[in-house]
Length: 157
Image (cartoon, rainbow, N blue to C red; front, side, top):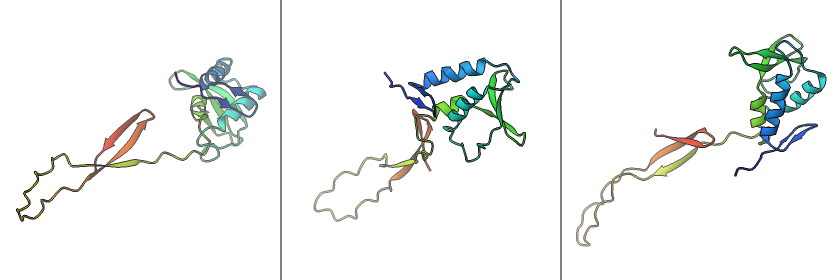
């Protein structure tokens, strides 16, 4: 059975990512599209946003307020409104998924492994034969590029 990954925010702790997901989902559903979050809910959500991998980089940390909006698929989501009236939608699910790792975790490196040629080795020669050793093919390199946390795909150059 998998172990629960806790989500620790500034002023709140969840024993598992699922508990955090349920909490923020319930928060989202307490509001109608167009409504602004209360100060306490906005503070909790901004604490979770610190776990977003782009927080402080391409994602602005200067948020005036947070509204609830409807996406193009008809679902509700949070929307950050900045002081200059620009806005962007927020994924609390994305932030929760990244809560188990440090905020500045480096990307995993691409691993390479050498594989031997698929041809069988030549038969052993008798001690009296004076032939040049047979040429062998150099080993091929393959790189494993992860597609998802539980899958990997081999790519040959």
